[in-house]
Structure formats: C-alpha cells, structure tokens
View 1 (cartoon, one colour):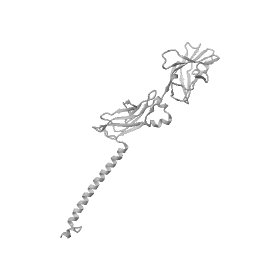
View 2 (cartoon, rainbow, N blue to C red):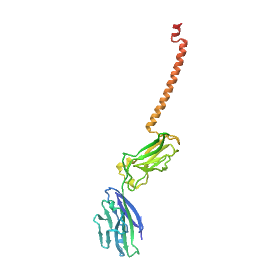
View 3 (cartoon, rainbow, N blue to C red):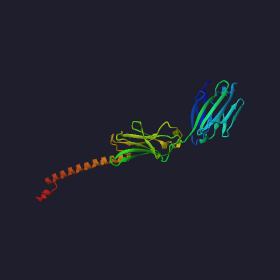
View 4 (tube, rainbow, N blue to C red):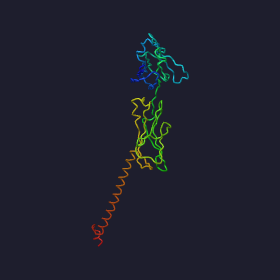
Length: 291
C-alpha cells in the first residue's frame, strides 16, 4: 500500500507530512491564534472508493485523560459522512476543521481506516499541543553584573527579566566570546552565570536558545524585545574588570587628562629654569637696579 499523506493547514501555513500507516506525528498551535486547525484525510483517495473499504473514523483522546477510550469525532462509511461533535466541521473530503482550538483540545487525534484488504486497521496519530510564547517584564533583555567588593572582580552575570518562560518553556543561555554555551541557573525571572576565577575577556551574549518551540509563537511586533543582549569584559584572564561604554569614555578622559597634567608640570619646570637663568643674567633689569 502506498504511504499515507497527511496535509495540515495551521496558522496560514501548509505543511505536508508523508507517512506509512501506523505512524505518529506532533503538531503545535500558538495560543490565542485565530487560525483554525485543519486535518486532512491522510489516506489515498482510491482507498475510499474501493469495494473493500469499510469505514474511516476520526477520534480524539485528551492529553490529561486517564482513560484509554477515545471520543469519536467523525465517521465515514460508503455513501455517508457524519460529524459527531458540534464544534467540528467537515473539511475537504474526509477531513476535519476546528475553528479556534483551546487547551481542552490538546491531545491525540487518530484517523483509522478499516478495509477487507488489510488484516489490521490503518491509522495515523496526530499529537496536538498548544504553545504559549514567553513574556518579558522588562522592555527587552537586560544584562547586569555583580561585583565582589573586596576583589573588585565580577562574580556573576545576569540576564532577564522574564515574566513567563512559555509552554513548553524556552531556555535563555549565556554564550562565551568563542560561542560556546555556559551552565547557568534560572531564578526570579533571570538567568545567572557564575564566573570562575579564570575566564576570558571579551563579549558575553545572552539569548534565547534555538530551536525553541515557544519562540516561534512570539508575535512579530515583540520580536525586537528578544534580541540578544551583550556584556563585555575588557580585563585579562583571571583579573576581570568589566566596563560599560560610558566607563570607556571616562577612562579615555582620565588618560588624556593625565597626559595634560604631566605636560603642564614639564612646562612649569621648564619655565622656572628659564626664569632663573634670566634672573641671573639680569635680563629683567633687576640686577642693574641692585647694582
């Protein structure tokens, strides 16, 4: 028998999935989306018109259900198609459509075909879930640092602040200057990176780990809020001294101010030597007057 083809139209996206009968798949729908869930009959059209065809049934079992029994959604037999649930409607040939799926619709949808051509019923299971995007308390990802007051070294980097990690939860990560991921802990809406005694100077980046299912449900209008945030440490290995862009400006000011002070001291010293020399020569007329 040819592989079944399951066509799912979800959130204005048409996705084709090829299956042999008895296979499983998982699809996800963004929470609060106004797009329908559309399940297309996964079996070849020729099977329905065959004189060996008996029936096809769509059924549903809720994700939290402890029962092995399923709820029948649609039944198709030669010459008759009946949708058994009022929230659902027939879609295309022997498919189903649900206008606004909710959390109570999360679970497994099964399309099962019975035919005298097979010793077993042919089926495709679709595991359906609803995804909630993460949310921020702040306008964007914000990074910060904690400094040991004794050593004046950075001991922790933080990034956040999240209100909700989403469902399934997303993961925020810290990346080192060479791009590797670092172990971190999540607490109070922030991830904290504990720095050891020795770590490289350079740019540390906080970002959402990809691929993450919930990140795909972040509205386009909010994606800029989730752009990676960076923190740069300019010190040598083992002696970190983090500086912000403003700190760099202050440092340059101090540097040039120091050069200016040294220049003034040299100029003052040179002026004093010249003045002493001219006094001795009597260039100012003071020597003649005393004489």
